[in-house]
Length: 256
Figure 1 (spheres, rainbow, N blue to C red):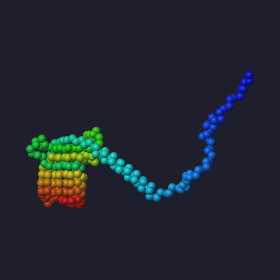
Figure 2: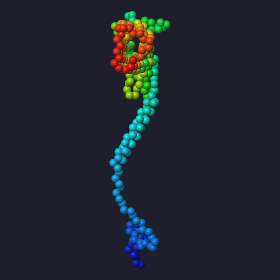
Figure 3: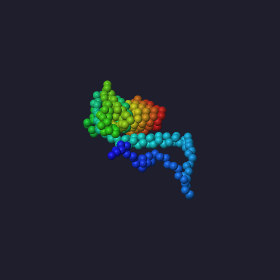
């Protein structure tokens, strides 16, 4: 018995199936009526006009500005306003002391001490409502605790500084205040108004008023002695006010 040690022959069909994907097919003849797909020639893309990229960048910039504005409006519209009443009082050590007021408040009123209120007698009293607006309640309250009215007596004269309660603050904070100051009716008053509004009524002592901006209103007053009213800007309104001949009234700007 003879044993054949040669390896068995592989099936030829198996090789053909394995190699079929790599064999380039021979061109076939087209039959009658067959259509040949024609490829259109490739041309380079036309160049864009010079203004097209510019317009696109401008539209992107405009969309960015609109987005930032919308975010800012949303933040400002969600602000929290905190208010608190403030009362300060300084005893009067001399008759009719001079009152110095740095008026930078939204609304400040100066008027005589009411005779029907014994608590305010023999003192200069300041009653105020101070507000602070912020998108954070904590920061708004912190501003109220930090920015206070300054009322003090120095050498027999009374000094009131309202600028801290009505400063514009930072870009996220706004302040406002309403202040009423009760003083002796005949006390001299020195007022420098930077902005906001100040109203004086019922006083009969000399005044030294310097209006840089805002609005200054005088009601039912008799201005006696060496008085000075200087208007550099803003508006000065006199209603039922008697001014003696010694008063110096100058208007360099604004409205009277």
